[in-house]
Every structure is written in structure tokens, then in C-alpha cells.
Image 1 (spheres, rainbow, N blue to C red):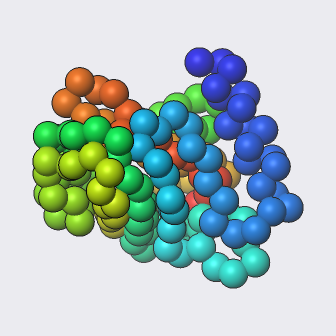
Image 2: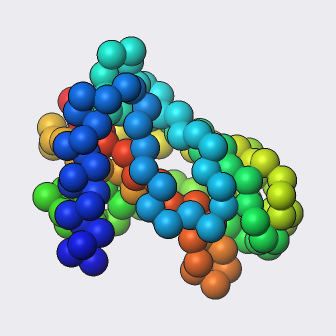
Length: 149
């Protein structure tokens, strides 16, 4: 756990000079093609999450195995500590662009929009999104740097 947290912190530091839309595959069983976060302005190496507004994510992947159900789990990692971030709809098979069951060797795009609450502190963090099958195994695991304004 500590090793993974150190790796994620090192990842955030490394993207400070990289191109926008940098993300980390943190243990996907699927082939991860892209992660698009909106807003993520040009020239910025992290997702910009504005308090009182919505943030959207689109994750494109090709799964290697059949998944009858998908659950989305999000954590905000602050100072290496993962904090659960409850989603309004964690069912990845409902209103997310996915049609379950997921079939192997088929490309999919998971989408979700969440409100960035006005009460959230202004902070830099890492957002970790996992799409899990019914056994709790990761189909997709991705992490990316963000800042709440």
C-alpha cells in the first residue's frame, strides 16, 4: 500500500513537466486506451476541478474477459492517503455508456459526470478510478493528477 502511494506521488511529480491528460494505469486487466477528463485546459498537466461545477471523465478500454457487472470506485489520494469518493451512480452498467455484460476483445468507453462540491478544500490530489467486476477484481484502474479550485 505504501509502495503504491509513493509510486502515485512520484507519478504526479513526473507529469508536472509532461503533456496534458497524463494518466497512470494502476493495475487494469483491460487494455487502457485513453482517459479524458473535462475540464483539463490546454497547457495544464492535471485535471482542473472547479468547486461548484461538474467534472466529467471518459475512459476507453478493451476488456480481456467477460464481465457481467461493473462497479465504479473512486478515491481521492491526498498526501498518499486514499479517501473514498462516493459516486452518485456507482453502477457501471447504468447511464455510463457501458452495456453489460462486457465482452472480451471489445472496446468500451465508460463516462461519468460528478459534481465538485463547493465545500471541497482547494487542494492538489490524485484521482484514482477503478472499474471492478462482480468479484472485486479491477477491469480498469487509472490515476491522474488533479487540483480543486
